[in-house]
Amino acid sequence: MFTIEYIAKDTGLSVPFIRKCVKQLENILKPHCTKGDFGRILLTESGYVIFDQIKQLKAQGLNIAVIKEVLEQEIHQKSKHDEADGQNIVNHISTDMNLLNKLFEEKDARLKEQAENQKRIAEHQQRIFELEHLSSHLKEQLLYITDGKSPEEYKSAWYQEQMDKQHLREQLSNITDGKPPEEFKKQLQQEQLDKQRIAWILKELENLEGIFSIVNYFKRKKLYKELKDLMNKQVDIPPAPAQ
Image (cartoon, rainbow, N blue to C red; front, side, top):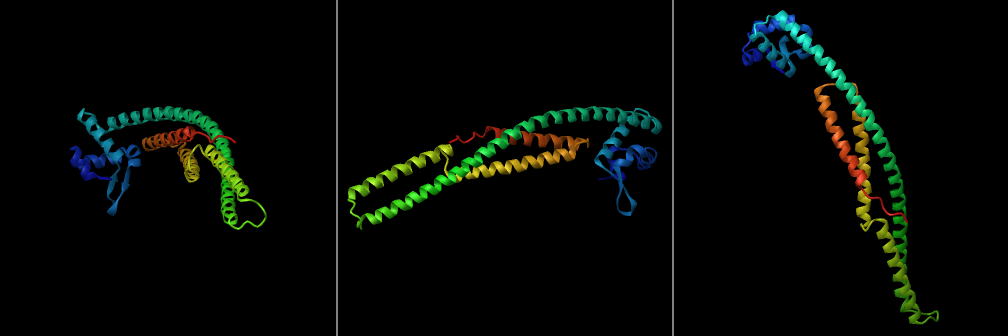
């Protein structure tokens, strides 16, 4: 915030002239003024910019009345321009929302498929664990054969179990696209976090609709860029092969 004294010193305008402007240009400067301690008038950065423009108009020999007309005309023209920009933004948002809806439909289908793959991974891991446990048990029992089977028969059964485990490992590798189960799980978790972030960005964009200012414009632009990056990241993730 800027005091009247600071603006006077920085622009070369006199303090009385600035106070006169604050009073006679109230409709223009009121949105950019506030009161500080002891009733001191403080101006925002936008108010400072307006006084810099007043300085230039005053240097051209214009009095306060004419300066007021010039500023009001500029504000009116800017309002029309902002209104046109706002309509363009609304149209752009409508187009982007249609694209986002399609991307979300594809993403939901992919998440459903990945959830099914994750379930199959868990089932295969459980089966591998059971086979490994069984294999260890058979190795121990091989030393204490009492049912009439020969060691060669046990050995043949053990080799068959090893082949079954190898087959299951290959199936597990195909489901996770060659990634370890923990890495595949982390990928699914990251995708869920990205989806939550996308939902938050959409909520922020919804809150900014109808509020047009330079700050909100750049904020929307930044949110759109992040949203685009997240959606590209989600689309680029190859789905796990179906079993």
